[in-house]
Every structure is written in structure tokens, then in C-alpha cells.
Image (cartoon, rainbow, N blue to C red; front, side, top):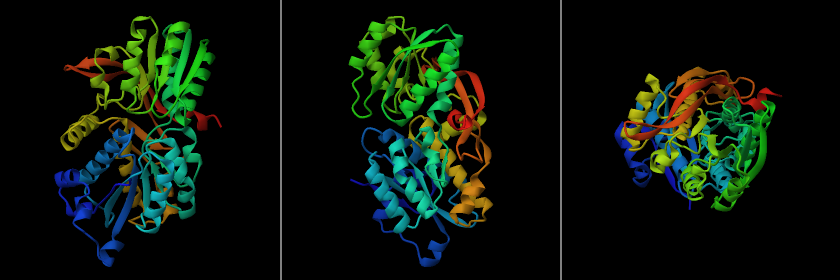
Length: 401
């Protein structure tokens, strides 16, 4: 079932905007033709139900927080968010995008919780010349599917090469990989293998687990039998707690096999609920709620007040996606020609809650710092505490072409 929430945010206070969601539609709020000409619609397509609903909730909350803090008016235009639930199903994503373009006449498409969902919309973005902002999905090739796609999330190779470098420098000679079997997982597996091998290490086994309803136990048995120095893991946001539980149930936490991962596994959204078993896990990623900058401290505090939870890396992707849209509209003086907006976005740079970021003018992909972190207790709660930084990392797959 598709859940639609259409909210003309200019009429709402900050707190009301964040709280009442789809009530505006239910009340039948509409815009006159004159108002409609002054309104820029952003179609936000997210998994709001199903196994990846946490991704949708984080991004929606961040996007609404951005509008509430910055104001719903930019360059003389009123921003209207239209949030729709695609349930994480590509066919539904494509149908919703068509409806947003044809019926709602949106000027931007945004969101996309998983790679197949972004791929499903790429031909529509090209045909309609609509700027399409990927706020979550992380397969490297996504931005190559349409000249109208830009990204404010990350790519898996971008955040994987750092943990491979760290492993090589910290005595890990033989590793296994365990990744979810879809685009980002395959990207992560390839990047880790190539980087560790180039540094003199060896990957002694690779495991791919299903995207939906994964049972890690039989795969972890292989790890237990192989006994590598370390197990490198990538799973989608929201799945890390299940993986960690089964890692412990198999006794691997006491086996001498070191767990290393991309930050999806120790996602801020679920990290504290994992318990002390997560302590000491080393990961690399582009965002931690514990990132020690004034911009992030303000973001975390506001997000907690608005959404009653800790922001994760999906939230910061949504926040920066809205920033990209706002700043592009300022550059075009409110004009919504798709080609002009994409040109305005290319090369844009700003300070995000995650640190300095920019949009590569050639690839339309994000360039950002990647941090090495360790799970530690801070004020009684588990956080990914950063202790080293790889600065201004582009997507290495595109950089190598």
C-alpha cells in the first residue's frame, strides 16, 4: 500500500510540521493556481514501511527539520514536500515517480533507500530532465544511470577502502568478507579485496547473504571454521543488530576473529540497543552522531527534539539533499529548469554536520571525509567515536576511470 503525505509546509510552524505529517492532506489543503506557480514541489520517495522503514523515517525527519529550520521559502518560491512510501519495491518506486512527475509536476525527485529503487527511476529522470537527489542508496554506478542524478549519501567503495587500509596497518593478514548480495555489497566486497590484497593481505573467503530476511547463522559457521584474522562486513542500514546478535550466538566475539565493517553495521539508529558486544568494533564511515563539530552538535540536538531519536547517516543524507536543493534554487533565482538546476549543483561545497563535503562537478557524486571509528561508551551510551580521518575522499571507482 502506498502512503502519501502532502504537506504545504509554509503554513505550518516547525513543531507542527514535524508532528502532524499527512494531516494536511486529510484536511484538504490546496493551492490556488497563483500559489501553485510560486510553489516548488519536491517528491520524496522513501521506504516508510517494511524492513527498511528506518531509512525512510530518518530521511523524512531530517528533510522536514531542514525546512523547519531554514524556512519553507527560498528564492521567492515555497517548498512543498510530497512524501510517498515505496515499501522498498522498485516497481512501486517507478510508478510513484511517474505519478509525481505527471500529476504533481514535481521539480525534484529525492530519497531512494536502496540501490534498485534509484535504478528504477533513472530513465524517468533523464526523460523528464528532473534533478534527482539520491539521499541513501550507495552503489557507485547509480549516478552514471542519468545525467540528472546527484548524490548526497555515499558510495560503498568510498567508505570501504579506509577500513582495508586500517586493517593492513593493524596486523590483519588474512580476512574473510561477508556482504549483502546486491549492488552496494558487491561494491564493498570488491573494494575491500582489491585494497587489502594490494597492501599485502589475503582474502581467504567471501560470503554473500540474501537482501531480504537474512539468516546469518549458516554463513557465520563458515567463518568459525576458517578462523581468519578478521571478518569484514557490510549489511544495509537497520540489519546490523540482527547480524551482531548472531555473531555473538555463534561465539565469534570470543573466537579471536576481529570484526571490522563499514558503518552500516554499527548504525547510530540501532547501536545503543546492541549492548556491550559492539564495544571495540572498528568501522569506517562518513557520519557519526558523535562527530565533534559545532554543526553536528546543533544538528543532533535539533533532530532529537524533532524526531525523539538519534540521527544516523541516512538522516544526514536527507539534510544535505535538502541543502543542495535550496542552494541550487538560490543560484537559479527560483527557476526550475532541470538542466539549469543540475548545473547549479555541480561543484557546490558546504560544511555539513558530517564535515566538509562537495558535489564533484564531473561525476555529480559526493566528495567527503571518511572517518575511522571505534564503538565506545560516552555518557553511558554506545557511539562510534572517530579517531582518524581520510580527507576529501571521492568515489574511488569513478576516480579510477
